[in-house]
Image (tube, rainbow, N blue to C red; front, side, top):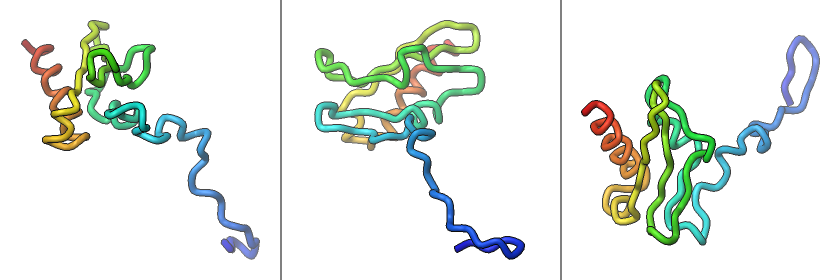
Length: 108
């Protein structure tokens, strides 16, 4: 119980699942590779954004995870992560490297 100024209150829940919908399960059995919106946004520079498609998805035909990001002048760039990269470097490191490739392309 929490007591402030003599008022006793039960502790509030820490996570409101509805407010954290972008952080729901990162992987499922049908997708060998997946990222949450928060993970993807953590590598976006200031002024960049995701497209309306959201944080990306697994493409079963190409066997890659991909998303599209917009830079600060509205040019779009594909971000692609291969499962082999995620296995050899780790899931998050593979995402970082994919974003690094996009930055180098953008800066020319």
